[in-house]
Length: 491
Image (tube, rainbow, N blue to C red; front, side):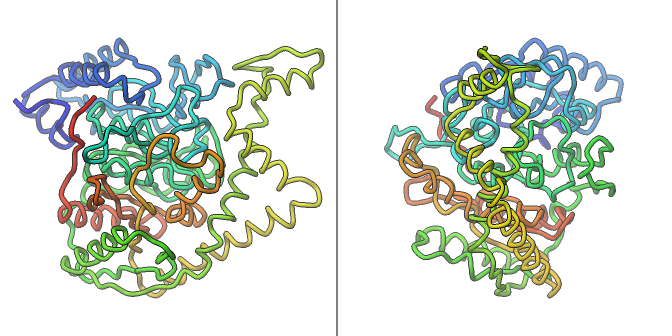
């Protein structure tokens, strides 16, 4: 029999139907894989007892013919999602051993549909980072390595634990969040599929907030089909989240294999950056050729305000982070460092509880929101954001169905290689992804090839609001043409 951990969600579903194995057997295989891969540091908390209990309960339901759409599928959960009675820390010291008495809406929907929780996955502290090096649990290691090299590489961030675990076959899929590229960039670095849904498509209730007008939950999976299966369970209206949109959830899986003939695919000229590596340019051209061969029409489009997206993002996101993180004060939950006064207690707790990157962003955010600077920075950034959104609206108004771009400016880099002396060097990793969050649009990253050193590279497709189905159809064309990649096992 095939190694159970190498199955896709779609294949596992068929295995349950033919009674080839049970959810408990599938879960045990993944728990053993997690144990053998602790050097990757993808999981910050393993929940084997809970996983087996959930798997047994699902097996009983499957036997009665009552299994849901994700019945028996073992998943990893990013440590940003509140899980009832299971420690949730956002990978920050300031949350300490916080155990939420409630479940996030997205995870509750996964359990409703029969999924099994293997544990909590590592991420950048409060989702602030592009490499998963800011976690208080230490960096996550990418299961991919450069050919002939033992250098440990980053898996991307902030959902690095999710991407690394899916790529290393430790879970069949994972929840993730994307504020400026935190699903799509790690997916591109690990040859997994990452979907950032339209803002409002998935509930944010019960997810630790970073920047509320940008954050969106989504799946990381091994294939486009698997990501569509997960998206169907994760999406949906939630009255507890005022930004959640009340429209029906389509059967995303039905979009897989649909013809893309006659679709207009925009190629934005502004994404051709100075100094872009030749292999990224080549990959982009190849991807366009694959879509053209499948019957799509390619058109050059202009997104003139793209160059302002990154600076505007790094004003809006820290401003909202500064506001959201004000609640971590050592009074109600989490870490508390005493002081001689309430003010000193706040200062001591926050100084010790927050890591360098979080402190940096909170200070930037507080500065841009302060009297005298609010109009010059925050208000201006919001105006730029409106222009970025309008650029996309103008493209879609001309009949463009989706936009094809690279997902990242490079393949994965080494742990400790970037951002040490100059944090902006790290921020530039988000250059192709932040526009999507600023405009609230859906985006998907699909593995599309490898660089000269054998590392995976991804392409990004950007869609119209609430038209994730088109992205799944187009993404599958890229996946079929490029094939699937799995890292050679060394851990």
